[in-house]
Length: 131
Image (cartoon, rainbow, N blue to C red):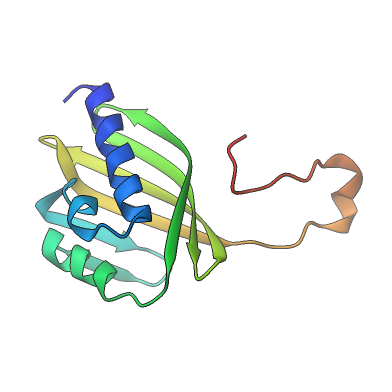
């Protein structure tokens, strides 16, 4: 797969994720894909189990992609994942094999208040938009 094809597949994946289209969202994964959430210590094996874990998740989810970068078999997506309107700043690292995702790791970070000590140095931005 060339980079344009992978990028298009990723764009379809994140669009389907935002629409809660669980079938289309998981077309990007190999049957034996592995998904890891290091912060919770979870590993989910297999496309079916990955899909089911997302289907049973009860919160209303929205995805706002900030950027997609990568080439070849390694791609990174930075996005804001909102659960019931509460944003979590997320990075997804996907490793492709034979045109499909073989491994994905997702990292999550919560929003925090700006530090007063650097207030004179910063520009406040809407974190849900790209820079």
